[in-house]
Image (cartoon, rainbow, N blue to C red):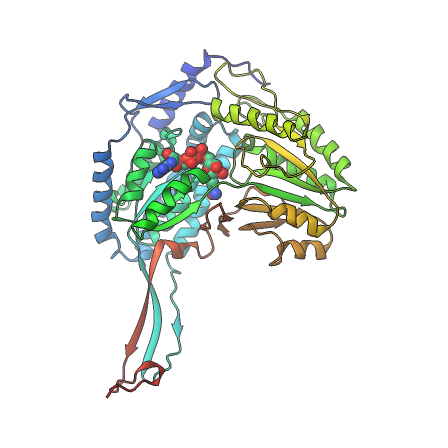
Length: 509
Ligand code: NAD
């Protein structure tokens, strides 16, 4: 049963947020100019003081100082902090999940999933701490050994987005810490309370194993505070998650000082549905990928590229499912679609639908506001729009539940359409034909960092490397060998002979 929400609920949610912070070990912050709101009603939860530029610089200095000691702690010993963090996350999964719901508006199942993802990456990082392998190569010179060693890199600046307020931090922090780096985190100004909670848990984890608490720093505020990480030479790696617009500002400035950047930017993810697809399975996967998290995942499905023979059938299924989706308070059981983050997101959705219609698109369902939550809350029914062509608006990322449907006739055409957008994050094909599946995964198939078969575009596991190409930024984080971005590589040649042969057979005498 979905409640009718209004402003009377806000004070209750605010005291709930305060209770949750205390349960997680964080003192509710002193009031200030940074406002933590809940998208559930649009009302204010708490306020806190943003960090000043001087405080951000001091935090970077503390992290740089801590790095000089942390890098010499053996990696398996560094993992003790991450193990303690995982223990705390298990204990506090429900509380942190609820805080994610309050601050980011995710339904409970997805908020708990986000905390589970944090636990998963901690486990991955703990194992990784004993597997930071270098290689040994055959030397061309007698009596010589040639090898590579991986060393800690330095201070990692983590800039994160509102929509994964805790998991993205954990992806970076768990791996960075075992790699011997220290972390300065600048979370989204939209989600300061979950950030405070995570910082507190990490500090508690460090205390539990007698590690230096200064290995993790939190700086709160907007882009101007994030810019300190971007400009500061002491920050060896800037791992930035957010919009392409943010990446355009950050990447050249980090490059100008020869810093390293790991960019996880916007996506415009598509699924190709072929005539052989299991349409029942495809429709279920499509609905979760397009409407889950109210369309506010970087991997949200935004474009459906469907064979002409099955397009009407598939549209009917997806339309029916969209119309039935329970939209409402994400704290309520049974609700599957929570609120948009704010008014700006709603304006962007409206504007995109308008532009799509001007381009000849037909709104098949959704897009309208659902009247719960009061005037400052933005709940919408996921929208399905059939497009005659992949126009400019379809090529843009609209961060809301808006799914465009395009039609294709042969697979080459589908793949051309699929790749003809600036972003390159996630992609899927629904087919039971192995040739089609393999073609999609081949070098001339999907150009994305993630390419799936018979599952949706969202919901990646932490074991694989996560990230995308083109305007998505080219970064990879989370599993596989993403850890290499957080370390520096040294090539070592050791001469254990009494001779001094030169490489390439050069004589110098
Ligand atoms: P955003 O770009 O508005 O903000 C992201 C972060 O960057 C915030 O912490 C913000 O304060 C900071 N920031 C913005 N400009 C900056 C600057 N010039 N210097 C330093 N820091 C700056 O993004 P958002 O609205 O919070 O999140 C939604 C966007 O993030 C979507 O485009 C989504 O696709 C993307 N996203 C990508 C991934 C991924 O892994 N590829 C994951 C989550 C979200």
